Length: 171
Picture (cartoon, helix red, strand yellow):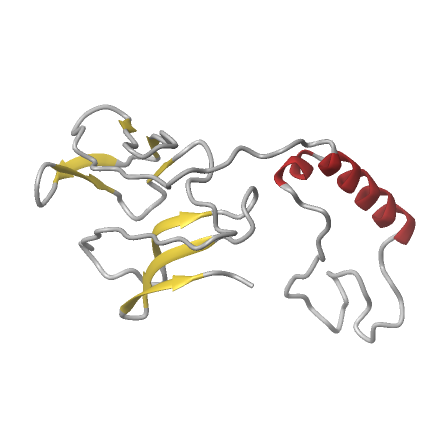
């Protein structure tokens, strides 16, 4: 129910599954028999919708964020934008020399910096940009900048992979 405050009103469970043994999913392989109790699904969905209706208005995000990353010490990168969505350094991220001033260094093994909530209202037009320098080419995709979609409508990812940077939005 906590997700209702994040505007989730329902979802479909899908997963890569062993179709012959029918281990996962809501339906059997031939779609003839549902494998969950429909009454429970309807009741949970009713509770989620009711909780969402009582969640209240969300705060308006104004103007995005801007991080110069010139602190060069501590565990906070200050946002000079109107939302003051300061970043907290996590998972071994650290300060390093930048082109001018300082920069953030990530080890590629779980280090990151994050704000307490979304910075960009993705239900409207928006632009994101970042400077990134890679010490090594990632084996798969490496995310440079992202915002999840729990409070806003559309998550996004600015990533490097398969020899190029790409901007993606799931769905």
